[in-house]
Image (tube, rainbow, N blue to C red; front, side, top):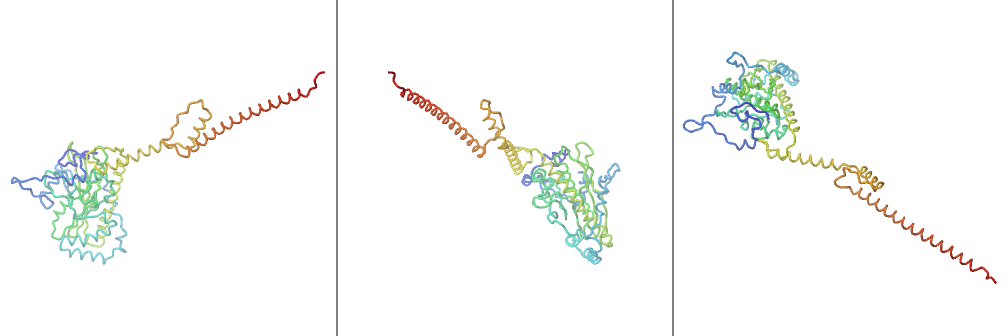
Length: 443
């Protein structure tokens, strides 16, 4: 599998060294300790130093300018993303989303006193109807994913809302092999490859905290997507495109972002994850502004799904094209994967046996007839089946009996002919003797 440059993250060092989910569940982590021997405080987006930590590990926040004066590059598919997100949605047309519904949204947003109210009452209106509830979740700590770094005691990612794929969409062999990159939770029926995340804040929430949350949470989706793209490749793949989306909702403002990975600046370094702002919408400003913001948000969910589904199909094709190695001992291969390979290997061997036995009865009969006509010629070498059919045996036995019967009848016929010839000769001699006996004696 593809190998990341050396880093403190064991999953970044090598795809092949990643353990299965079952292994990760039983592994223990040593947390940094203080001088007194106690565990240090976990760092989270609520800490002011958290953004600098993200920058130190190449997770670049929006609007960041590097020391050399350069800004984070935009993804290669920037224009196509913007065009896709701007496409109108019939569900948000004036005939479907009325002025009364907009006013109801404004009232709910104004009366949302807590963050939980925003999550329960406001976000669902912006998001609209979810086609498949099995592809969305939220407020689930990403405890199954390999951490950004093991040098610091970081809290796991925990977006308020995220969209991903059903686990069964991705071949289980892949999930077992790179699960710590693509499977967020140890509850295995939750969505995987979380490439669309949202952070929601109440009126008293901090915009700075929301920004750090969005930057941190989108990293997991960007890394998961890159793991799928790099699966089966010799090196990590960086095409410069964005496949992960993040949003913040705070005090009536909806802000949207993309994230894309980039190669390390120096050999042996860590890959970058650049976050770029897509747009900002005052959702309570007017009907038109709400429709535009909700259109972009809903389209981003659909686009993330389209991108995710394609990456999963491509990864599944890679694992299905791989040669069957029944007794493979690759690191991270699970018992289920090995058993599957053994079963596939057995089927392959059985099909070869069946193919070897596929000589038709017509070819077999032709070979037998040739032998009957040329007894003095040795039997030609034919790819005979391992086991002859009962029909062929009956045909062979019938021909043998027929030949024996014909031979027997021939011998009998010859015996009868000899007997008749002998009888005719005796009759002729008897007649001659009788004639001689009738002659008069000479006086």
